Image (cartoon, rainbow, N blue to C red; front, side, top):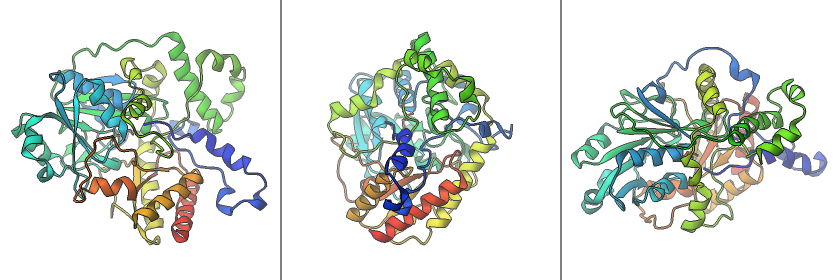
Length: 417
Ligand SMILES: Cc1ncc(COP(=O)(O)O)c(C=O)c1O
């Protein structure tokens, strides 16, 4: 997804001038909108305690989750123009790879549990499709047993999108092991500016033909990670060691903001603009050395534990919020959540709540940037989720204080709207 502009968050709070003229809720620094490298990432040196997508024998790195989806489609080598089923509840980065691969998206509805509404897929649509993308939304993975059987009966390949579920158990199988291929997004779980993974429990991955990044791209990737950490004061002491940043940054190019999730405000909704924003050209490159090294070496226990703690805290604090409710009643044991989904009553009210949360730079987003041609169906939960479901981040680098503040500000806004 495109960046959420987290780097601008702290300056926003500062630029508002004296705290006396400012609503109290804005008098605090905004929270990190993605994992950011810090010394605390190094401890404890323990494993996740949950299965991960890397447990599969066949793996290949990419620059992003969308690049991994594209790589999965290329592994399948489908005839040009073939249809690929993709949910109506989507981030544009789930659709863009289909077009990039020269294939055709065909949208399917979802049920209240976020699984494909198989009864809502017409015979004609199922007969015409050669592959299906299914996502484990929010990092709360579910068994895909039924979906896998449905795909097999129709000779359709299943691509399990684990962008939100790098870790976990999906029913009685580890995440990623229901699909013919599984894909992951590293930047959602690790402090890296980009990175993705294509994996398969059953198929060897043929060489992906990606181009090795040049020295400039390698340098930029390393500078990006350090610069975002420095900006958020997450690597105390190190910024002094690398004080002559100026020339390094100039050589590397502009540093992106660490972020996850698309902000739809004022963004064009036409296909060309959405394709351009997904920047699929980056998908042709291999990942950088720094992404590879951080992903391979950082301990994982803290990632899983902190996410679970933050999710549970948000759920508890927002349990009785006015006109809103956490979507998941409880956090399953086998989950390392990506976000805490919050349902807001009333479409117009959800718009207002979301706008105010964004205005306060809170770590939240929703998927309201819908790919042109997505059908509108009142039975489809995806259609309601696009507007009324807010995704509150709960990543490991949000402190307990960040989470308490997020819940408090959200409650305030819900109370006002
Ligand atoms: C479900 C899902 N799949 C795929 C992607 C693409 O991941 P990336 O941003 O790493 O390209 C996203 C991005 O947000 C996503 O939410």
